[in-house]
Length: 310
Image (tube, rainbow, N blue to C red):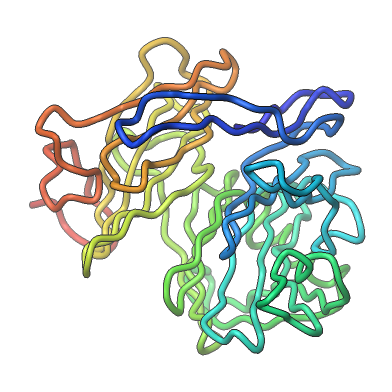
């Protein structure tokens, strides 16, 4: 639970549940920070909280309070940081990614110099290499192309301003990295094992606002990527399946400005989200008792450029 307040009034907390989904406790874990937004879970089950303002940093937070929060090496500089994700398929060379919600915010990749899986907490606090994403479109419509990583932040910032400004939601699944450009209403997919990328519009049907934070649910070969929404007619929660179909899960009932804080219970049967400006967190479940990664959703779907309506 992040607090996106100004002037040091932000922070991060944790809501604790029992196995039945009942709330049993709440604790504030990070205080005195500013505009904490999104972030993400680490492979060792701590949380990275990202400050989204011009002097922002990324903090590692231990959800049980066993360690004090600490600034990470992901952001030795400052920026409007948004989301965190990782690719640890190669444990000798783990990669950590952060988006920046800024007109010139370049997606960054951090590689720790000496990863120690016996003490993974310190992977984000030691020395490492920071590189930034540069896209190279194949043609004028900019829907696909190649990419590379550079240590030249200035070059990457210019590229971000031109091709993927205001990046927010971030997810890594197998060999693909997914991130959204809020202003462009686009989802970018990078092939992490090659150097190619694809871009897809998220402006489909009821998903007419700006794509924001993301969460993925996986069951076998079935995978759904869920999105929060900023603005539009009625801000809601939407999802994209492996075939590129977009679905609307729910729409605003009280506040149409922005949904945020999307999360799921371990069994996938409880979906949690908030209406950010009201500070209200919702617990949503299906009447049929099935998880949200089930193959049958009974929700609205939209035509996309990747598939036709059915």
